[in-house]
Amino acid sequence: MPLCRRIAWALILALVCCALPCWAAAEPEESAPTLDTVYINVTNAQIYHKPSTRAKKYVRLSYGDSLYLKNYNSSWAELTDGTDAVGYCKTGLLSYQNPASAEPETRYAKSEGVKVYKRAYTSSSVLGKLKESDPVLVVAVTPDKKWARIQWSEGFAFVQVASLTTTPPQEPVTVYVKAASAPAYKSASASRKVGTVYYGETLTLTKISGSWARISNSVGSGWVKKSALSLENPNFDPVSYYCTAASGKIRVSLSTSAKTLGTLKRGETIQAVAITPDRNWLRVIWGESYGYMRANELALEMPAEEKVYINQNIVAAYKSASSSSKKVGEVCYGDELTLIQKSNTWSLISNAAGSGWVKTQYLTPQNPCGLATVCYVKSNSAAAYKKPSTSSGKVETLDKNEAVTAVAETPSGGWVRVLLDGQSAFMQKSALTTTPPPDYPIYVDPYKGTASETLEAVIALAIAQYGKPYVYAAAGPDSYDCTGLTCYAFKKKAGITLKRSAYAQGYDDTYPKIESISDLKRGDLVFFDTVNDGDDLSDHVGIYLGGGLFVHSSSGAGKVIVSSLTSGYYNRVFSWGRRITK
Image (cartoon, rainbow, N blue to C red; front, side, top):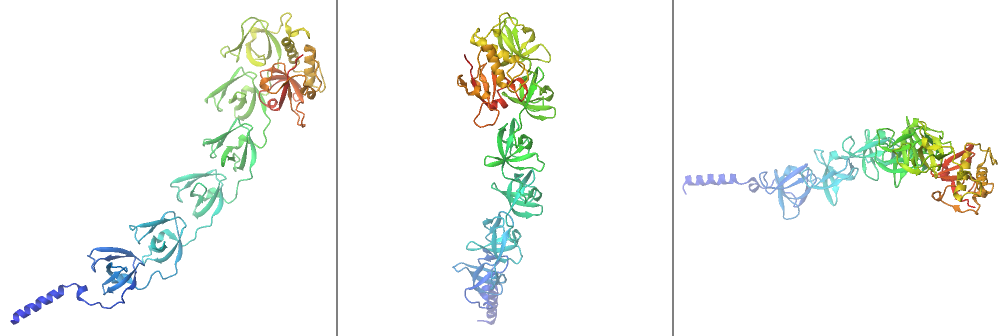
């Protein structure tokens, strides 16, 4: 071969050899033992299909991941995971030293929902989440100090270092709400509200962060201001309180505008367990939970009922202490009411029909119904009305000479409050006279009138004693005790001799016993248990007038009076009645 051709082929061969890849042209600088274990010593390392950064990416590994080393040179290492899979990474990203060889350190999740990643970057798969204060074993921290390699299940995973703390969680502490109410938030800031806690509630304190406290109860957990909590328990052993309001509201929180959980009627009891520092509210047991009631609606002892009377013809009653609120009814001159509470110029009153607010100026403690005068209808078709107004509706139309008992004359004049078969009504004064007609049966001698006429004579005589003084053992005609009045009236007008003590009259089975107030009739004797002395249930007596009223000689009032049986004291101590017949 000519020399020139030999030189040309030598040049071509040299060029071809220079173009071959380094990996194929060079022998490894060092020969590593076959299948030695090596570890990733950087936060993340990219593994390629071939020893070139331009090659297809194979997988991304993170700090501490281990592989087997098959071969390497100064730039690239050939790796396997123990299977036929082979990849390549830069030699400088590997180490024979296991970064997890140090003693594992326990750290704790700082907050709820800390993510656990498969690799040390946030776009990798999320393997799970940690709850606040959950412990984890940290086996290594990446060189950039941003990621912690942790033991996870049967392997390893990664958590951001910033989401962990070396401080163990605080031991749970029992605390109590000392504020009227306190909002609870999702985090330690006035951000998303998750609920409200109220005075006296028992909570578990699990963490403190600055001015905030993380608390929990049976409903859940949240953050509240530390200033709303106390280690001192404000609750006491349950104490029974009486409701003194006509309608006491149990509310969900310490506000009159808060949701109502339930209602107590006057006289009903409830168990209280705490009272607020301002003493305006009581924490009460309601079912299996708690509620709050105004302190002025409760009392340790039920106060004695205060009776008041209407001193104007017609007075409107309202739902609340304002004439602009809903009107719930009307009360009339002489109506006996129970005073429940006062609020400035208004008073809450109740009767058998319900309760309402009236102006205090229209009430008087003195019963204006003190006349107890027998009157007679002047002419036929005389109307008796529900109220002292001709537009109020007629109760009854009476004939000439019919008798009615007048108990009061309205202050404006023109109207008289009367009893018709014991029921209260109003008649125009001009329709009545106090002059009895000739031979009116109410004045018949004993044994000469019909049974009903004789009974009316007994009632009229008893009412005529109105205002005469109570004197023990007196039987008239100037003073009486309770049985002295009943004996006097029945003996004088019916010729009936009653036994001389309330006990003897009450237990005298000669006369039919009436068990219920609703079954009483005009003229029946009514008996009461006014003295707590064991089995004796009859120690006071009066004569029933009908309509829930009775006349009696009262030691408490010190005179002969007319009282109500429909509500109040005498309603509570009523024992039974006796129907006196010849």
